[in-house]
Amino acid sequence: MSPIEQAQELSLYRRWRPHTFAQVIGQELVVGTLRRAAAQGQTAHAYLLCGQRGVGKTSVARILARAVNCPDARDGEPCNVCESCTRILSGRALDVVEIDGASNRGIDQIRQLREQVGYVPAGARCKVYIIDEVHMLTGEAFNALLKTLEEPPPRVLFILATTEPHKIPSTVLSRCQAFEFAPVPQGLIAAKLAEIASNEGIELEERAAALIAARSGGALRDAEVLLEQMGRGAPVTEQTVLDILGLPPTETLDAFIMGLAARDAQPPLSIVAELATRGRDLGMFLEEAAARARDQIIEGSTQLIPVARALVRWRAELPRAVSRRLHVELGILELCDPQTTPNTAGPEEAQASRSQSPATEPLSRKEEQPKEDTSRHPSPQGGPKPETENAARRQGLRASPQPESTGQEEHPDWQRMLAECYQERRSLAVFLAPAKATLTDGTLRIALPEGYRLHFECLQEPDARRLVEQIAQRCFGALMAVHVEWEGRDDPEPSLEERAALAAEVLEGEIVKEQSG
Ligand SMILES: [Zn+2]
Image (spheres, rainbow, N blue to C red):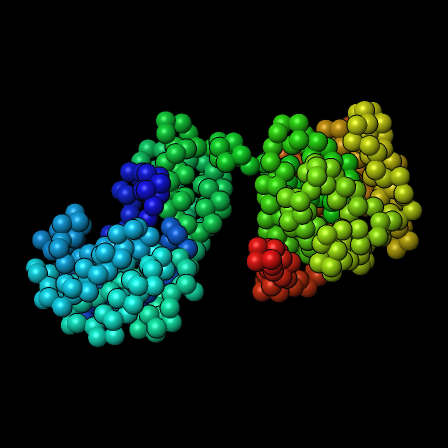
């Protein structure tokens, strides 16, 4: 662990470090296997613990070191109170040696290890070498280590930990029993944060906990450090987390994504303009938007795939753009303009043409597209009034009766309602735009077609429902009821695996390629 990481490792994280296998979160398989091996006295000579940082590799190594030496161990769990356990816990045990592969001392320590490993363990029953970041060892150190592993002395246990197992020589790998630590699931991290907060007297909103968990990328330690940094003296709210991490509000992300999905350039352009004015990082915004779109795709909004592809592409192209803002704005206009041919991406033409072509397909095959409207992109500098009129006209186009409609005609006040929604809260108009509205016996039915499940879900949010109802009452006079419906309810949906595979293909595939290229 680097000095910076050590400095970041604040007291809260230390206090909540797991001391038994049972306390380790999210690694049931690994922990269960190691605990059973310790209980039966059948540990291997060498273990390799792989996995990203902050998932508990070192903690597990230390627990195992105590477990194999504890005279009072139960079911493979160390007692943590006996002399052996307390000595190891306080770092005073001579027979448990921790080596940091990343430090310059690594090679000297390994040499020393070679010399000392033959000696019979001093006090403890088993000598344990924990080598952290083992992939950082030099070739010379690896050779020394390999010689030891080839002829393992009795009562010596090696626990190697690494974030990058592919950098470890196969000769070393083949002599270890390897375990893969998974990223800790977000739900478990959020629950742990809630537990810590309530014990530490930190006021933590549930949504804030979820947000921290989502941002920690499966690293529980990072989440704990974030909680400690944010929880000093003040309640940790969703807004605090957004502010401190410099993240855009979910509503902004949704308005951006939905604007693109509805081929309505205005909301995304306004958002970009605002971000630029406030000096926010467009790259990070695009990453957040792509992640948000990805979550929605996995949840079933597959019509967002072209949008997600575009976001990933724009993000990849950003470092080479002359003007970052202009680059994104042109991307938005291109994506929203059905007239635009896809192959205009320049340097990334090959990749772009492959990934871009789906963007020009209809959002949903059963969905009519407003192809007739070629003047859909008012300039971002346009004043508020014409903007609103344009919006009303645009949204109004979407509300025209469809041939297969049930016979009930669209109400003319629907256009006014969309315009008012647009003024009140832009995202609302975006969510409502694809809907078909009908008025029967004082009941306004707003039906979202099957490809617009996310729109429907966004409209279910209490705040959005209240606004829609208020504006509907204003525009339609006295209404008995306002119903927002989704027509795709009974449609068979792709399985979770299919969606996940789809989303992974869309996003990870391209991100990996972009990083390695
Ligand atoms: Zn003990």
